[in-house]
Length: 526
Image (cartoon, rainbow, N blue to C red; front, top):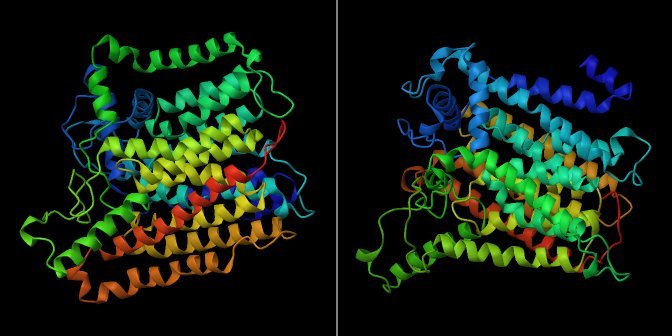
């Protein structure tokens, strides 16, 4: 701690924040880890032990390789370090293998690769407008943003307790955003193309990149009113962007195309045989849709409108993830979710093209695309909310209205991650960490925008405070009631539905701001 204080006082505050969070991550090494730990251990074994032609066919474990090829090569590279820790973890037949050396390696690999995330945050901070900076270090937008990103509660528990490699992936995304704001468009495009071939969930925000690059890079001039000057189109710039995407795709998918395995890879990446919702419903529109269907079903049975013998026995809250049919409302297909998602993102993409708002407009559109895909996508995982929360952090330090949306989205989105950590030892950790992060977010942003109206109105405050009794009921009251045996899914159901209301509200509020904010001229900062 003394070293951190010296670094802060000496002006190296960013290094102190980064060092502090790295040391904290090391303290989380012995904590609970989910089945994702075994997933990635199995992928290490697959890529290390088998030829590339078998990577996307291997099915000894139920945790088959279902990430794009760049991530497979990433696991392959890690495996050559892993063999010095414990060779047995690289045996495909060693299902559910675990050792202290395996734990240490996999935890350290996440911490080490987070270095890219730290660098990306530093680059993003360079793009922050310092006009609102206060005299105190802790009141500066750059400092606040650094804390909101480096110490993000959701990223900490998902990567360093639950276990995943989101840090370096978000690092690629943030770095691509920073490069676009620095007008290094080709670098930004390259980074995002590479990111897509690491994890395809980032397709959610691909429309934003495509429209923004076409609008701000391929078209080189605007009219005085901000509308596009069509004769300014630069065909060679479009070709250069297309070439970047093509070469990255060839490098990633080329070997599998040459082996005639591309259909197999695609089938692994997009498993539509899974159900509409994950075992734990992500807090989105479909969670509310499912609850409405259940409610109508109960009412229909009570009024004897529905025939009990025709009601599906499978429960959508029992942990099953295969396809199921709704009882009263129309059942939802993958195509229906795609159409809903496209309809939801169209207004923000439309604004990005016809109502340019500078870099903030791009960032807002990116968050809206991520949120719209989260709200209406097929088989969405609750962890996907981070795809909206992290870039929203950048918006939050620039404008009071965005800070308000950030607080609602972050608080509800982070709380929706609580079911990921269901073991008793992690209960005080997740409660304390979220409290600290939420309290800091509220008070730091209130201080930053103290000259403006309150960030949260009474209804928004009341809603967020409602998370406390919800947590008390789910963790401390429900387990001691008879409902535990009759309705074991109730805590997950209540958490999902309550958080879905907050996420939906934040999505709607951000969508309105995209339409109501006036166009702005060219800016270098946001």
